[in-house]
Image 1 (cartoon, rainbow, N blue to C red):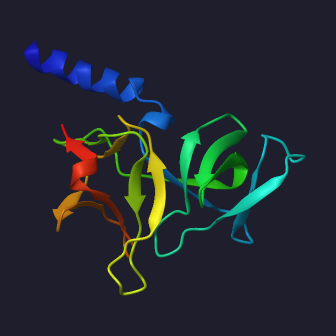
Image 2 (cartoon, one colour):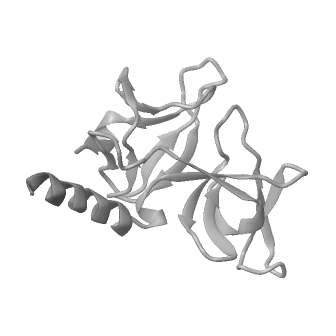
Length: 163
């Protein structure tokens, strides 16, 4: 009986988590490799920036809110709307892991790979406190790391907690 209650609790927790509660990285899936990020959820909205396709197996933006036809995203420090037909998703939270990595402060910074060789990780984006970042991650040199085939996301240990 105890196992059933624990399993039921895990299922309900997964159902209760909304898109903005879990770190989800987004990318374009269109034929040309780009997706316009607009000021409003409409083709008439002003183009603020573009969302690129996956590069080195890492998305180009962060999902803020998933809608039926349009989703709100953060790309290159700008927040806007993209059309879902050409939007891909990537997440590190499956609900199956034994540990859960959670953002410990508001505007928790996420860093991308350092291609400059100067050991200064570029800011990828930020997420609110309480965002579930992953249940599959590693730890190294003061960072939690979310792995992809080539590029990774890094979260400073002081900015996250493990539950």
